[in-house]
Length: 273
Image (cartoon, rainbow, N blue to C red; front, side):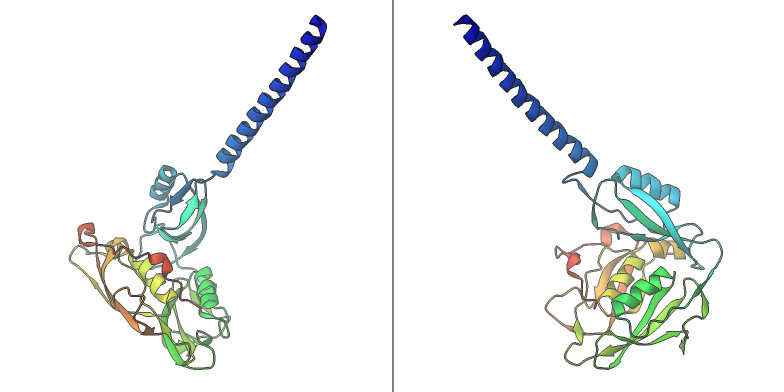
């Protein structure tokens, strides 16, 4: 009887030990996976445009993200070596440890080959333009069967052929199709955005930049890149449609006390086709 009880106790203890070991292994594995994948840890990407790489790396470290310099453009009036563009954009939600791809302003101008954008959608053309270190300029719409289909590509008012070597940072104007059954868009929310990000958001919604007014806090080109929008006209509105190609007027400041961002979510601005 004693031997039987002894054996039963040993079996029971072994079973309990096995269960405890399994629980410990499960908890340990879950903990390690959480550390490795940063489970449920999301951060908001800061705006690092117009920062030096050193400043941006310090900011990235504070937010728990990393930087990769992947390209450069040449913008004449912008400070050399400053961050011109970042991907993901400021305000995006990412996991801790994510690498942010940055494009810096080169010391000297470089030449890039003009791509062939005719036949692309606006979304595709914009991506191609930016990948070449160029900028999206004016969007002109003409009647066509396909809305936002690129019909012509121009630079400085003249049509530019694919393969032409141009200076990086140059603006490429696009002539786009506009079907009467698909010709409206909406004003995006750009209050609180820096100048370059606001321009990109407006183009993403098939609209143009009209008047840009800087207040007296903006004295230099570098100031303009740091300035944020505090007035836009037309205002953000998901109910009132605008004809594609219309202009948005902006007022910008470096005085953050002037900036009052409405509660509407700017992530709704996804009208680009």
